[in-house]
Length: 276
Ligand SMILES: [Zn+2]
Image (cartoon, rainbow, N blue to C red; front, side, top):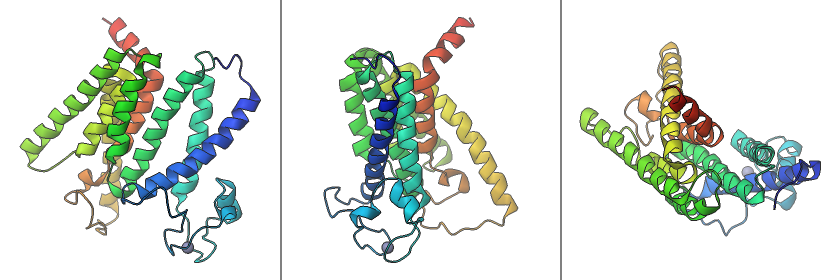
């Protein structure tokens, strides 16, 4: 089945669907790294832990109506909730426009991939964790779906997992030998392997280099900022905890690189290899 033409009905449906999924992802982002069940209890305020009534739980709308406040304790609802409920439908609509010829199956595969990237981006930012259920789970889903994925073959997907996981594993191992500290978590290794499962080995390499590039710039900016304001060291319980450079989670940059690989990976390699 193809989408035959861009229809505004589909766009509206995807915005609603994306906002609902975003709301679900917000729950996953909060609960999965903390080992909480996603089956119950129903949504509660992370501050006062009182259950949120149904009218306080409508994606996007409740956030705007309640003006970012919990109904009970008036605690501020983190901006991340709104961000994910905007990012997800936006991604779904853009993937729809991109896949209007390729059909719903291709849209579904890419939407699943981007959804996983959105989830791990925020778990990594908030807890320095990329839960295995999303990275390793994503590796298997990406491999399993690869025969239907127009962007690659099963073998390319398999090599994507091996190259993505293997290269980062070597870098992480080398860094640890060289510096004596853990620079990169195992979560990043599994995440790049997952990106490889959906974008192939070329995609994994593209994601690695583009994320290193953007990550280095971001790290530099943060370093400059922290030199200006006298180093505020309120993050003593951080997972890495030694220097500022390692306190920036790398997962979000890998996720960005993964989206880059999905959108521009093929064009980049054609351009790059064509240059010789
Ligand atoms: Zn509350």
